[in-house]
Image (cartoon, rainbow, N blue to C red; front, side, top):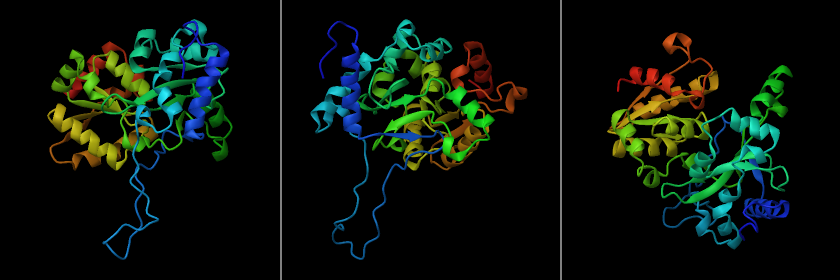
Length: 317
């Protein structure tokens, strides 16, 4: 994958980068926020324990792009450098999306390796806000896209009677990327270099939210957080949250769900599961009911610093 010829990608260069991404992915798998991809494939029971059955599936894992056997896949490690972060160069819907989230400044976008992929690209991620997904060592595992007009499409879907076959997709994940194995923002080695991350872990514990924007905004507010990229957790994510909390935050976990029905139901289950983990103390940071319902329907990405300070008093820092 070659660098852009003049600092900005031409249409053909965008198409080439997008084509490579589509080629290694096979296709893009639309995933709704409440339906996590199974993280591990269980091998079928066998009659003998002496040897593995030939048709058993290995445990799934995500391989960093830089370690892929596919040379073109390896070249996508730097794809994030080619995403648009200047609202003046985005489509009107994408520009509106970024302007409504002032914490997504160009510098923040570069830090989190995310930005806008124009409609001129040939990928199924075209026209979406694209995020890099990193592992614990800060190596990029994959990319995923968010519909900048999801809220409008969701409202239209509800007004149409919520037909099952027309439910809008908020995120698109690359096929064969097992998001249930990972946590967004889990690249601790890199993040722990920042003083505010260490201080937040020490003072309040590890915050867990849903989407990438929640994690990015909480980070901008000085809060150390990781995200499920769903409202439902997998066994692997619960184990990873517990491990991070014990190692970095004295076992303390603060849950910050989206304050809607789906978000709160999913995090009730997560609270129950974490409460059964040895050495972990989990509690809600907010909900639609606390503070007299002031935060009903809200998401962490919408929080101001003043509002976070109010929530922090409840947490008991």
